[in-house]
Image (cartoon, rainbow, N blue to C red; front, side, top):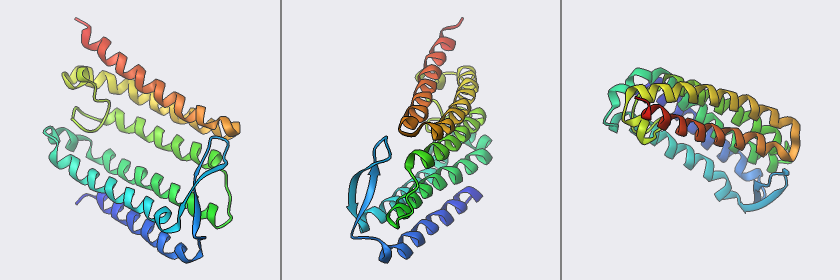
Length: 209
């Protein structure tokens, strides 16, 4: 088991402890979803609300453990295993931060999601950019267009561009903190545009003679 996988288990344990410790203090019905303006628009039972994040973290951890072992190109994944381990930690900490947001809100520490989410997603997108810059051709991780999967050259060029775009997207997402209910635009639009541009670029590179 790698250091990233072990760290993932620690994060899962922290998630379970947070849920268990806070369960008695939470109302029977807890806020679980917010709209773009930061207003609560969804509720669920405290059991379901507190178990959701640990379950997602557990499933994600299992996927992170399985993928490097079942990918037909796992020898390529081994080449960027170090940054992948860091990504496992960052991704699971992101999920833990969402759990913390739900817990704190329902304990009357009401920090608006449009403050916390741009920060969390901004750092996540930036780290996605770092990961893309190191990723080698595989079937599970990265910008997996048919054209990128068909060629190491296309894959490398696509991911160099994708790396820059997602790091820029992370910076733009952070700016969403200053725009209140419009924060969602700063978070989602750059990531969607970056993905689309990278996909089109991979096709353009593939068609080059």
